[in-house]
Length: 163
Image (cartoon, rainbow, N blue to C red; front, side, top):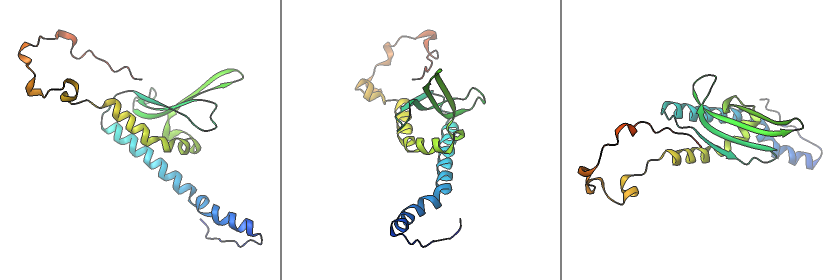
């Protein structure tokens, strides 16, 4: 980035320059930081072996449709990815777009980035397993399992259907 600090004759333009200089000069560094965070979060989720489909809708400013981010298996690669999806109306009907968040245009990543902390908290809430005491009001050693009956083949047939 050139280290040029022009001097303007107009006080209004000089003031605007002083306010605009940092964001403009940091633009690519900030985009790189956003991309690094998205990649790191996606890798951590993938490495955790979390295979639970989840999505959260977004309310984006100046967006004329529905948008959401999700954690799901990518049908093209078979990998679990943080995905961005949107559907919006056109004169020819609804149009949809879905792809891994890291592969979206820079402006999309920049718009979605502030939602990632909430997305992560909501995903954690979805997969959180409540301790037995919260579910039953009892500690495990207070429950008499001697009268429990086998469940047969029911164990292992529960599937996560997603949101």
